[in-house]
Length: 566
Figure 1 (cartoon, rainbow, N blue to C red):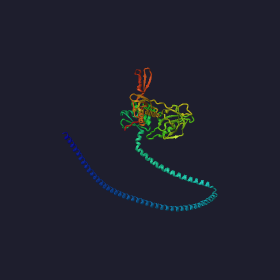
Figure 2: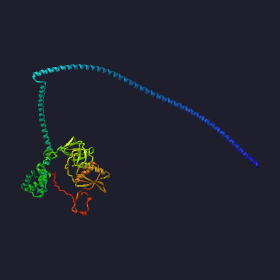
Figure 3: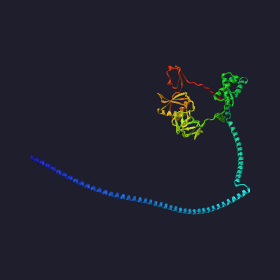
Figure 4: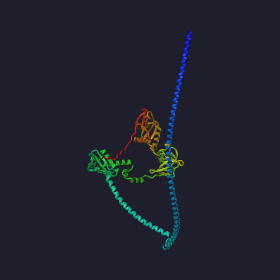
């Protein structure tokens, strides 16, 4: 049994071995066939690749030949064009050379002819010199002969001839000038008459009304009758007292005052106003009122009414009279140029290029450029850079002497150093005492100026200092507010002055400001009889210590301008 098992096992093993060998054989056969097929395919691929490579090679060679031929043709064209250009250039050069040679030959000929002409001219000049010598000799001989004949020298004869020619020319010029003047006068008179007539026709009526007529308004015709008076006595009294013609016509509630003298018209108008207001109108009262009114007007204008000059800046009337009066009545400046320098600062302003410009009037002494000046109020010293006058254009001069008004520039950058009213003198030869200067103006209205931006505080200070240079009435001091921050409390002459300063700060210095409500200076009478002044309500003392609070008042005399209803 075991024997048959072994045999079966051997048989199975042999069967497996034979199957393995057969499978290996078959596998080798298939591999061999696949290798052969692969070789055949490889050979076929190599053949097709070689054929394709040959084709591509042939195509590329053909394309290269075509490109070479194309480039060759282009190159040949380029060479041909360059050769052509070279040929043209050579041709032009040859033409230029021939032209230059022709011009050279022509120039040679011209030079030759010029040399010939120069030589001929030299010869002619020599001949002329010889002839001129002969002429001079002949002239001298003739002059000698004439001197012998006339018993006069040549210079005397020349002077006499010139004098006679001058007299003749002068006579002719005078005649011609006289004729021209007469013609000009005639023409000017005719033109002037035309202009005057046209002017009178256009504006004569209005100007005559403005210059000669005033209208006095009344309430009713009853008042007009009282002004006229019985048989016109009141009107005659007013006319004789004032020199004004009173015209009573049908104009309702109005009386016309006619007089070329504006002062007399104003006296008559104010007198009528007082008489109508008072109600007592009779000749004696009229004379009294006219005298009082005339006295009031004289007190206002500072001169006698009869001496008042009638002038108008609008029409030009009386301008010459004003100038003549200034010449005769305004005293000439006095001063000694040999005394130590005294110059009064009457105005000052800041210039970005030269610093502070001081307008001065020299009372005594003389100031020159490069002099070392001394400001007596601040004790500061500066080197004078330049001096000059305004005409109104600024003109630089060597010096300013006693009695003159001009400008002084000393390179001052510190605005506090120059004050209007200060005295300038020389450091080497100082004056004993300063000039009286100007009276310091006291402000009447106070207001706070605060910049919107807190960083503009220093800029606002600088702007106010520059404005104070030529505005002595402006005062300011630093102030602090809880709501508005840092600013300045400024003093002004009035509300108009405050508006002007605020407008200049905004326009000229581009400041954006907050302005507090304006206040005035108050006087406080305390219970201990002490009187104090305050300009800020925050400085008001305890109310229990105050007896009364006083605010400023002003007395005014108001004279209204002439008003006409049209």
